[in-house]
Amino acid sequence: MSAYDRGVLRSKILGLGSYVPERVVTNEEIAYLDERHVRHETKRTETTDEWIRARTGIEQRRYVPNDESTTCSDLAKWASERALADAGCSASEVDCIILATLSPDIHFPGTAVFLQSRLGIDGEGGCPCFDIRQQCSGFLYALQMADNFVRGGQYKRVLVVGSELHSHSLDYSTRGRDVMVLFGDAAGAVVVGPTETDDPREGILYTKLGADGSGAMDLHLKVFDSKKMPHIQYNEKWGVPETMYPQMNGKKVFLNAVRAMNLSTRAALEATGLTWNDVDWFVPHQANLRINEAVVHYGEIPPEKVLNSIQLYGNTTAATIPLTLDHHRKEGRVKKGDLVVSSVFGAGFTWGAAVFRV
Ligand code: COA
Image 1 (tube, helix red, strand yellow):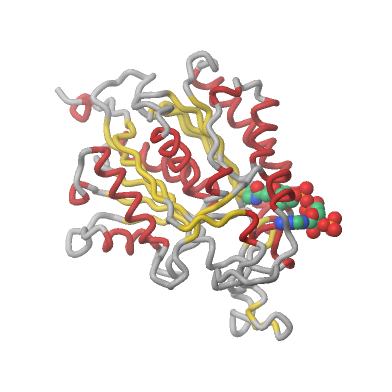
Image 2 (tube, rainbow, N blue to C red):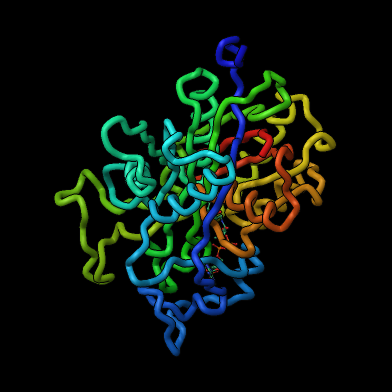
């Protein structure tokens, strides 16, 4: 009798994959780039490698080619294909797509339908497609949905993707340097399906999410403002719409991230009855290495169990969790079946934690 028949379904991660563009942009180079990612002789932004490393831990990030050939759904496709191959399943077996991004291909429709087409599984009878707009928390928001869809017996192969193309929407000037230096382009994906076992320590063990809308404007990107007519307003001085670039209250974001990630990580261990001895890896969202060091310090998390990748990729928002896992799997550290505790924090404010076997 299958788990479906017994009605005791649990879900698990069947496959994992990620994609990063080839172009490496170092902290040294970023100061010389213009908004088309062309390097100039003189600095365009007053920033330094020392400042960026000391405040964030970031050393470099990846950018898509600057030929306007790449979309967020392309990055999502390349990561998805790797996750599907890892799961040993074909795109045609996917019966639901959940895509998390804050950098969609266009405003609407959502990016998941573009991903569906790029995977060649669109058309009559196409699977449902969801877009998740929970920024840096998007991947765990999507994972919770996938877990519950599979547990409920609704879908059997859910493709969960975090994909971001940040580099086209940043302010390459001193005015935008606090945000611009943080972000990179990448995608990560997992395939979620039912387990063959009802062992509560297998598969996805736990997900818990939260949000606090009072922090909504502390990290935001308007692009448009629907109360304005027309809803995009040009700024004469800037020569571009004034709503075009992300805005951030960095200190407030930092403090709230440390607090929320610490509390949600503690809650995850308490709810599952696990200790750090039982857990293989702690994978925090990759917003700032200093945030993660503080979470590790306050949470008394063994440093050797902590996986980071922000040094190489910057903050890739919804992609950071699968990207970090896949990066360390390629390095030979993470193995199939390892038990992972993950916690995230992002714009909204939103946050969450999950415990799962990879
Ligand atoms: N290069 C050089 N100087 C910079 C800079 C950069 N890239 N960005 C900001 N500065 C300057 C500021 O203009 C300020 O100058 P001033 O003292 O002359 O006014 C100075 O550095 C200090 O700025 P401040 O904003 O107080 O720095 P900070 O210690 O708060 O660090 C962040 C800034 C962005 C690194 C930090 O706030 C942060 O990481 N916050 C969380 C960001 C985040 O994680 N976002 C995503 C959440 S999911």
